[in-house]
Amino acid sequence: MRFAFAVRKLDGQLNEAIEQIGQCQRLYQKDGIHEPALAASLQATRESLESLRRSLSGIVAANERKFDMIAYLTEALKMEHGTVSELQSCLRVMPESPVRETLHRMLLEEKQHEEALVKRIVDLGGEPRVDLEIPPRPTSLSIADLLDQHRQRELATQRHYELGLSRFEEPEFQWILGQLNIEEKEHLKKLDELLGHVVQKDETAALVPHELREITWVDPYMGEPGERPWIE
Image (cartoon, rainbow, N blue to C red; front, side, top):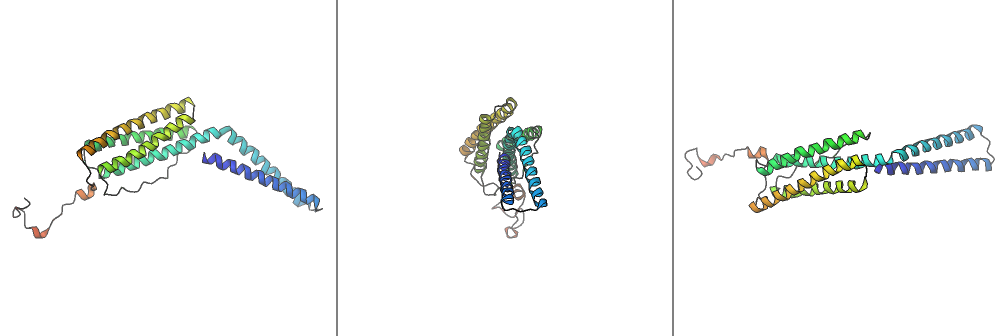
């Protein structure tokens, strides 16, 4: 969509340049200037720009719908990639549990979404590009916080697919967006269930990264093992 808008803007600028050259040609004649090389250069430039504009306009007119599809799918790919990165960050700080297992299954499904979008973009002649980087999660977040933030991202992605279903009527496009939309709704349902479970168990403590959980703290003033009845 942004590309098509930029091309239309370029088309307008080319038209303005052509009109400006025409104005120069009229003033050239009106002012009685006689410089054959200049006149020939103005005419050649005008014809070149007119040819370029016709070619560009024809390509855009024939492919504008496809360009819109590629732009839409690229945005969806960016959202799915963000979800994958976020889930990976969550799993790095989350201890083994049924919640973690469910999120891991979601991660595998989100990666499949990425693959499906990449394939469709390539099929349309596009080049999949994702430059998004998700910063590491702060270690002070609880499981409930992580689930809630992830749910917001999933909801935004699901709404993006709903928008695509209303914009693009092509059968193949409807099929892939419909499938992705259904799976995102399933993820939202699972996240709601997980949130309910976590809130019920009051799992509000901040998570500690795995690398810190492996550290054993030793206080040399606590005595030798076997001599510390207050902790053993």
